Image (cartoon, rainbow, N blue to C red):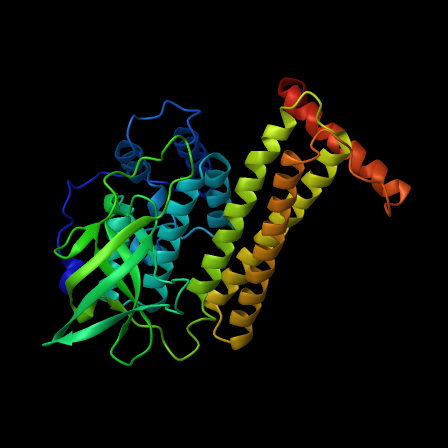
Length: 368
């Protein structure tokens, strides 16, 4: 299968086997606590990423006919939400990996599927690349003919710590053809990483990995060709929107918890923000079900519904997360305005906020 079938240039891992969706969520929470620093975190990013690989979480979306449990897209979104609630970096890493696997699932050959899916079950990770630049509308790198293969030059901004992944999915365009996914091993001649480390600086969010491509020889077997002309309205694109929405939701929850910790937290504000986050969560779940249907449905309306639901989920999640951030940085100690709110709505929000605060401050009482 060309370049993709080359042995991974790192020691072969033995990953845990996750057999249920509930177990996948539990593992995601554990790994998220490690990346977020609340668990017993390894000292280096490489060690944390190796722990992720060994957890089995990277294989949960592998189809059942390739040995995986093929969790629903709603569960994938929940995993990314759990991750992003603790670590923005982990949320990005997982979203790019799951989207990459969906590209292989949707457009890969049988040989590509077999190789990549079996590797993911063993803990291999896919990173993602973006080549869009502000100064010019570029959405893919151009592949130039080189004998029976191509050569790739340019630059991209990739998932954090791409150098510690196994493959990176790069949007590329062979000659004058359509954009395709180019699945490259991360350690091959011509791939250069501009930074010297992938450790976050001073606790700030992990920046994208700047990757340079210099005369990279590309085998045609590494290309994932979309079928038909409607590549944008396709499951991989919809899943990317969905998992971006889940990362916004997770980020909003992370800030929301900080607000719950404030001794002067405003009860009605907490109720309103919790309602907005819950609405985003519900829309994400609905979009996940629509994408599930698009994966197995052949009709165009399945893909259209999936796209519309995913786009709506992203818009609502971004808005909800933005409201939470604004409330924390501006008037987090003041109640929301009652202007225009019917009395029964204000009362419901106030009661909701009190329940959230009580549960957060006295979790043992809630469990009893």
